[in-house]
Amino acid sequence: MRLLHTMIRTGNLDRSIEFYTQVLGMSLLRRKDYPDGKFTLAFIGYGDERANTVIELTYNWGVERYEIGTGFGHIAIEVEDVYQACADIKARGGTVVREAGPMNAGTTIIAFVADPDGYQIELIGRRG
Image 1 (cartoon, helix red, strand yellow):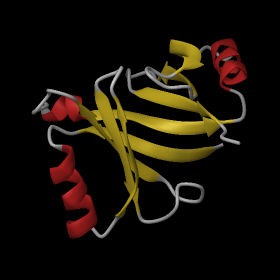
Image 2 (tube, one colour):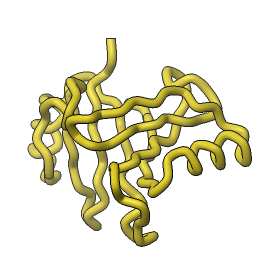
Image 3 (spheres, rainbow, N blue to C red):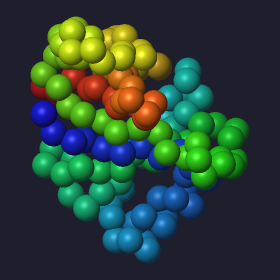
């Protein structure tokens, strides 16, 4: 397993990309609109996603502002098999809050589990 990315929500995606790239020196690695889900994802970081942990900026269309307490989204962990990881987590007493299946408006297999404090961890199936 390895840590993939941390997701934070933004009310202005272009402003956030400019900050992380221009102010902090990261690179925009990829950006994709999901019209059916009404959101855009942008991944930024200091290196290629295959070898580095990055930040996922999420812009939910039409939302211009978040309370700082709701700005943090989740931690993501890559797993070999999301379905098996959920079964293993349940067997060890963990809580699966979103069963394994395709992401909203996409095809990547994901699931979410909650830690004891309620923070969510996304499980993402290893990519080919």
